Length: 446
Ligand code: AMP
Image (cartoon, rainbow, N blue to C red; front, side, top):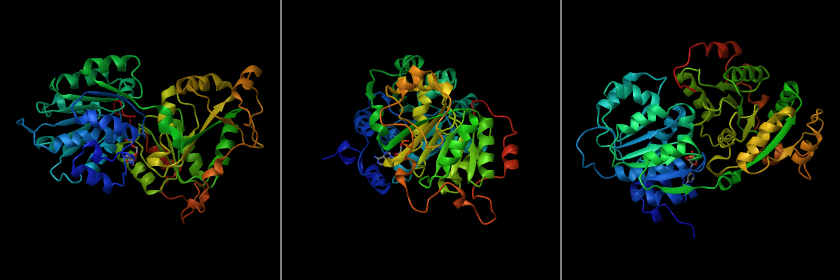
């Protein structure tokens, strides 16, 4: 019999909230992290997005907050640092969901791109949990607005990504301001390199928990489609987007400009498409995510970092229009689908001359990406003979594309979502799309 949340010795206000949220049993990362987390140990957890890692660090933290602090003061008792604004907002939302039977619980999100007023007011009152991106938290710390003297738990979510984004100095400054006897919970896709060294510095006798990548991705089918050039890629994309098994899709491109261009092109073709990238003002980003959640946007064209916190279970497809620059981003990208126990399909385009980049991703994954073609749309350019042979798996190739395997009647990402005025709901006119992004980006605002 599988263990329940109560078996993990979580208190009833939390187990009731989890039941109300529809969580039947803990995920592997929760099973392994919650008991040592409750026992007060420091943790170094490698788990991917989609694994349930947020609850894995929030539940032991909230259980601590169920008891009154024995320290005077009004500063935060727990701090979660995240790389992106969207992820911070998601974490706070989850904290409110799991803490719904703790009416006294006060949480605040401190992220850039939003006004200081509300954040300053929240910091003026007693606060239990801060969820923040490092840049904005530092802004408040410089003004002396944050008192960490009663901090009990420090959490770094997606620590590797925060370091990739250049937050190392900010993180070290923030950690130095927290009490030494705190509990430290670190979550990262990898502990290689700088992030491993940082983890050593921040933790005391940590328990290491490694949740296998494969187990988490059981819900996501993957396909690799080679194309000759951009024109060929666009034809393939058009074909795929007209597949009626698509409910909602996230398309990843390499640049912010390309998200706009592609979203405009898709919009003009009648798809309910919009873009998401770090140069958009935060209110627009929030609105876009809300439109995605509400189903008003069917196709979101996004950059890697902007899409990190997206947790929308109805996303059925991820399309890697451009290959990710870093192999680990592949895992984060495909994790936008197959969420909350559902199935998803991740399709990756690669131009024939990009197979070295594909191999890099495959080495990181320690497995091959299943290569396939669409009948009548096969690439005509060849990779070098040996390479092409090595990459092709038996039984795969011509006509093997299985976009329809999840077919659901009446659902389509295509023209069926066009609104009465002939334009899709939730999408924006091409001209507006460009003017959205004329403002310069704040620091680290992907
Ligand atoms: P995360 O990896 O924290 O981003 O969580 C991925 C998704 O799984 C989110 O939509 C969570 O709400 C959901 N989730 C987390 N834990 C559970 C659970 N034990 N049972 C069902 N869904 C869960």
